[in-house]
Length: 328
Image (tube, rainbow, N blue to C red; front, side):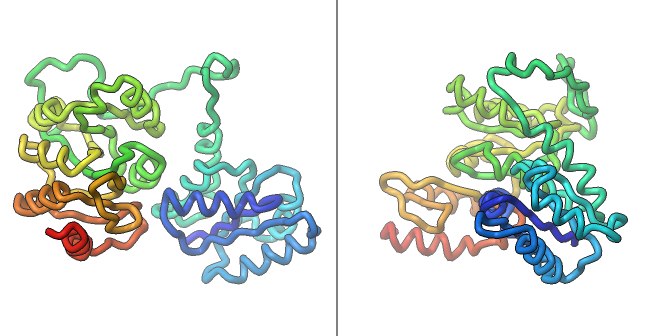
């Protein structure tokens, strides 16, 4: 695995490392090197050398630094002499770039390849609102996709005529950083679909979800009954969908309506009155417990995992705790 060293002036690297872990989960072979106000170039260089030595494999290393021409850049640039064929450095670090680097390590084993890829991600992550302020923006060519574009005649069969579900997730926040980056990278959907009667009626929330889609992936918000129709529509046969549900109740309604889901990823369920905290991310009330029991009776597997890198949590233990604290 390619080692990653994050270096910055001050504790920026520590903060962005923590944020990356929140989104993508804890990562091996990653080190942070902070240049503090009381320290000099030699201190930073020593930290980087120590970080390199801590890696199991020092052949492929990617350095992510905050500022071109700053001390972290200068010191690492010196250390790279003689390793240019294997090591790589990218300046102007932002969170999107770091998360993309984590994702790239799942399928790339060369620091040069990851560096070349994440430069574009770092640039694409720079946005401004209102968009009229971005005077340098150029019209980008649409990415190639097997997704239907425009009106497709009813009855048309695309692919094998059956929509593919790469992930179905229960998450109170629906589409957010962990989904837009870690889960999208891991499952490679062509479309993200938030399935919710409530959100489908809320123009603002609907717009926010549609705008939060990662590059190259479409996002839609649909009511549950429409999702049941989409499941049976052969025009979506070439679609790889990541489904998002706010609640287990919405997921159950969709499955009972015919949506072919055999596994649900339980990401987060927010705490509210009448619910008990079961894990850091999951709170349940009596109706939630009954709903999950019904889902399991229907043969649906519940997998508890916030991000792909996390180990699966014991759902039986979570249910047992919820029942005990709720007195069920």
